[in-house]
Amino acid sequence: MAYGVKVAKGDAYKRAAAKRRHIRIRKRISGTQERPRLVVTRSNRGITAQVIDDIKGHTLASASTLDASIRGGEGNKTDLAKQVGSLVAERAKAAGVEAVVFDRGGKQYAGRIAALADAAREAGLKF
Image 1: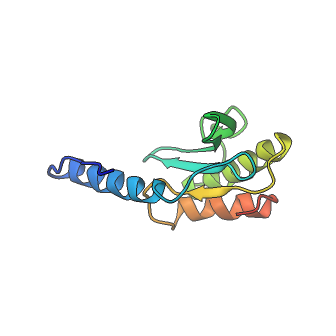
Image 2: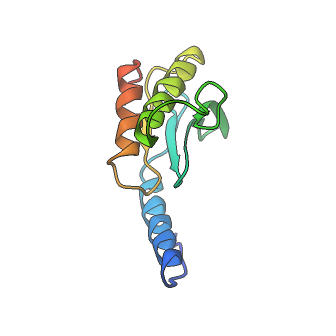
């Protein structure tokens, strides 16, 4: 099935390109009950991670820079992304999840995305 994304100018073009990349990634990646999908959503200010079972359509665990334990924390955005990664891994393990499929959401695997993934791996979540 073909998905069309309208091409525009400036920031809208960047958002459309990211949407195309995410659609291309989601064609191959799907979360199951045994290996749910770890979705990372990054904005300029914050980062969110969710562990999703796509078959049931349920979110099993989530963490964000807006969580009370992380909000107003020390360090830069990369340090906060590491905290989010370890927190989502901790919550996923509490929900009974041992391994996940990583979905970077059309973003480049570098910087905050990579920091979150590395922190989740260090906390014991398998990719």
